[in-house]
Image (cartoon, rainbow, N blue to C red; front, side, top):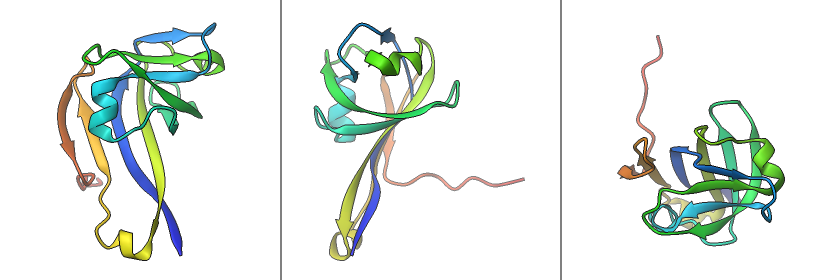
Length: 127
């Protein structure tokens, strides 16, 4: 059996550009892509925290260290500069792989600079 699991995510990155007349994709600072394990042209899911939009596209490289997160093409209608988004990628794992499975979670500051990484989401108390 194969299970589709979260492979990695960039949590609460800030959209820096929204380019309607650009070929569809999401340009991501190469350092962020590398840290998360997102490959160029890999399918990604984007969850817009600011407006609730959710959509799929693919990742392309932006300049390393630039902090660029550019939502391009038709997806530019779903995210604007300064929106907070989560970028996630998923993969299929077999039962053997699931025994050691851990996602890569990358957290950033308000400049899209990596603040820390983790392999599990902290448990939050519900009131």
